[in-house]
Image 1 (tube, rainbow, N blue to C red):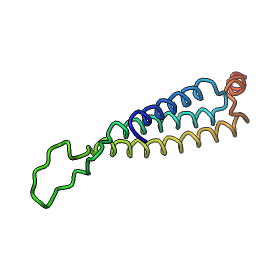
Image 2 (cartoon, rainbow, N blue to C red):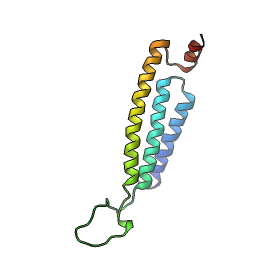
Image 3 (cartoon, one colour):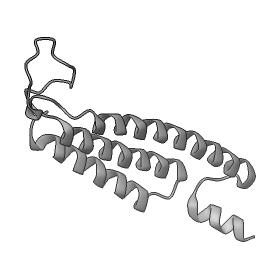
Image 4 (cartoon, rainbow, N blue to C red):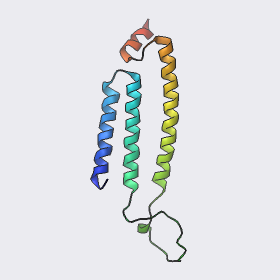
Length: 119
């Protein structure tokens, strides 16, 4: 994807995820919407870090001293890898909690769950 198309994709994913978090009643669907929000942020950061015509910052054996514009910054990519790992761990904990909630209350529908918790 080129130019603004990646930013439009990130914005669309963000809006779909936000809509899912606010409009859906089922907790698993809310978790999936939260994952879409995470993907939107990751796509946005990686798109910001991309440079056309740049290469990874690996030392050139020719001895020519290149300028910073010849290299990409690896830090945003490394941070997004960390964000993916944290997201996977968060999903694992969330699914474990949802399993326990469903076993105890018999539902994952938010209004019904709140009603059963009050009883």
